Length: 464
Ligand code: FAD
Ligand code: NAI
Image (cartoon, rainbow, N blue to C red; front, side, top):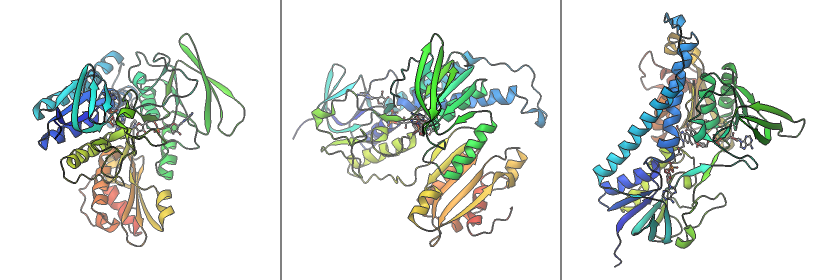
């Protein structure tokens, strides 16, 4: 029998890879994880979820303190000032603590961190930096990178991607965001709250593709109310930079008169693509699909025996929690157990204010599959939201008209990201809207709006 250096080698230490490595080690497998970055945690911890949430939180505090929003609660603040360097420093501290935390977990679980970029030599041999290692099972968890916009060069000074937009050294006067998706809206919100004029240019006729239609419409209304300019059905035809200014040329997506936008910062956020660069997958014989993703089966196995793939590099939503769950499942499959991820119940959250969250099918997608019943409840009628003067948004529950099984839940609320977990759990357990409606929810909480929306599916909410 062949002798290997490791039972399992995971390539990439993002939420998919580090979780897979820890679970494999917990299951008694001798495990290593190769990571090209200086720190563990991947895109999410270093330049994604964590720093973006740090800036979203801090910028929200700044906006509340500086715009008199607290005065109606009797909290009067004068002379609030922005210290952007301090804001970035606190963000960096959170990132450092969390990436350091993964290093600690690797040590605790005896996962060996192989530092360097990994490239396959054959299906069980990988070169990491100058080192050659062999493993019986190899998990590809190399994540994703920014999709470039042809003809637009990212210089990380005037024209930035999300990584540059997380580290701008000063607040731009005018930030043009190309792409009205999750990154554009989250980071656009950060810089708007800190004082920038923000214009979002979106190719489609609505922001947030993939979300429920009504949620997309209502979100756009709220972002506009906050002062963000949304130019939908508009395409960018070019960006030129002169000194510290950019000129963004745009025209209607369907064709028509062109115009230019002058900006001192441009954020390109038109999506992310799977990262297989330099992995030398050909040497292992691993196949990609037409979208450049590593092709896998239900168990996360590629076409090559002993080679697996998870997270952003594989098909499905590009979300940290999806990658993490796949990390646990793939390690369990490698260990001979049965690792499963229910890809129909993966929540999505946009961490703006209010937050926008969904799980399962949109109303449009559900209707394509059959007859549905929809219940909605506005936060305007929720006692806690009213008390907190926090009434933007609603909960929407979509259920199968015949079986009443919940097919999708959508929430716009300051607490949507936390509330959606309850909906996901209910759906995972196959709940009906009646199950949610007859579950006792604490009063006064925002969560009662989910119960009321479920009651509304039967046409019987109490508080509207
Ligand atoms: P990654 O996190 O991308 O990790 C892959 C790792 O592999 C990287 O560290 C890379 O250096 C390493 N690597 C690549 N190739 C090699 C190689 N050949 N050898 C060695 N190492 C290699 N998702 C959420 O769920 N919630 C959020 O709030 C959220 N916010 C985001 C904000 C931003 C600005 C961005 C850009 C993304 C955000 N995401 C969020 C998405 C999330 O970051 C990704 O879905 C998640 O990181 C994917 O995890 P992964 O393990 O598949 O890959
Ligand atoms: P996205 O796919 O969410 O949005 C990209 C947007 O750009 C779409 O609306 C698309 O129609 C538009 N677009 C594409 N080409 C365009 C063009 N040429 N001109 C104008 N608009 C164009 O991608 P985004 O925002 O870059 O984020 C990438 C991924 O990162 C997300 O899909 C998500 O999975 C992940 N992410 C998740 C977050 C979260 O969970 N809170 C936060 C940030 C990122």
